[in-house]
Amino acid sequence: MSSKKRSARTRQREVFLAGLYGADMGDMDDVFTHEERRRDRMDERREAALRHKACASKRRYGSRMQAESAITACAEHGTTGLRCYRCTYCHGWHLTSHGPVNIP
Ligand SMILES: [Zn+2]
Image 1: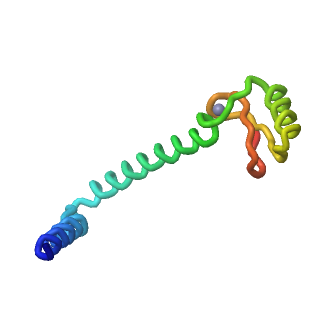
Image 2 (image 1 turned 120 degrees about the vertical axis):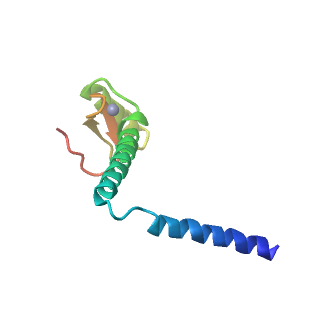
């Protein structure tokens, strides 16, 4: 049992070391390109998360008036502190309870 565990740990260590030293450090261009691509992928993911949070996960209103009347309705039901903003993704209007929003 314990020998099985040990070999799994050894394998993990080998994978870890290969990650550290296995990369071809002689060709830094490749390293930078790789890093750039990795960053692009992260930006895409962050962008998608932002979009989801700011747009896709929210109710969309077709106009500022509709959004503001929704805010009024929410206030009547006890939810205050809402504001609306023009969405840069779908160009509709969304509500938020979070701090100041940059309205373009
Ligand atoms: Zn939107």
